[in-house]
Length: 174
Image (cartoon, rainbow, N blue to C red; front, side):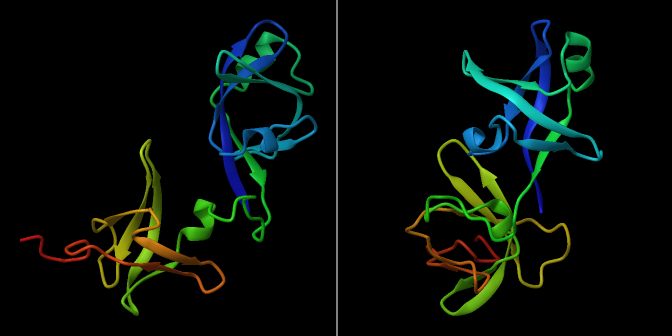
């Protein structure tokens, strides 16, 4: 399974380094020397030569990208990695978005919908729940992804158990 880990920004300096907008919680794992990344929509592979942090930004030098012009040609490229479907984050309390999407959302033993999206906000994450029987494109119910509400994530069973506060899943907000 391919997953996005970053987006190449502007070149940094004249020796081919680029800034990378990180899109992973594990940049030190994904951007290690020798890591092979693919460019979305392309067969081109990039091998990380040297990553380092500078003023809060990730700078990466790739094998074969040795000058500013080569680095500029990569600007805007979306970087992906091949991740095993079975791979899990090191922390048991963390989940990859791709593992959560599609899980049934269960409230009081009844399936009310499925996880259609995971939204990452500064304060907390939200699960975008597509209600059972909802039309395509219908608004999602946003469920705070906190332990008090999402009590259990059962990945093998492909379900998320939710203790919903009153009104969270009501179709009529009045």
